Length: 138
Figure 1 (cartoon, helix red, strand yellow):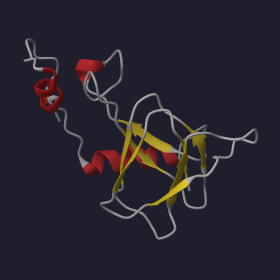
Figure 2 (spheres, helix red, strand yellow; figure 1 turned 90 degrees about the vertical axis):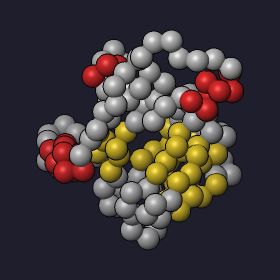
Figure 3 (cartoon, one colour; figure 1 turned 30 degrees about the vertical axis):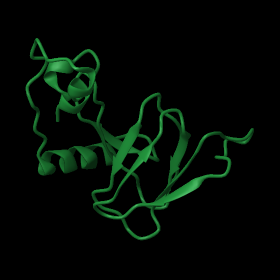
Figure 4 (cartoon, one colour; figure 1 turned 30 degrees about the horizontal axis):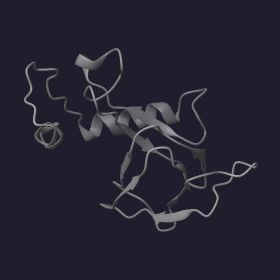
């Protein structure tokens, strides 16, 4: 993962190396998800592993400009509407039929997304949530 397209667009060149690549192995990530699942006090609607880089300890990010989370949502649960200040790029690694995300520009007084767009999760599928848009995972 790198910033070459943005750097080219801005007409700049990197001057200082900011980080080394970080590798996460599938087995390690799945073991961490299981550890969280069985721990007391974990969220009942999200089992997430933040994918940080040792070089970005202060921000807990993967790079100085990229935040990454492996998120597992238990069956029959809903992750209530929330939003991010930046673009969210969602990659589905695995999902059963009927798993989806709702997204929209605003929520009503009850916290329900107004006129939502429904995005079905399919393994290998990707969708983008624009900055500031509300979204919930089901």
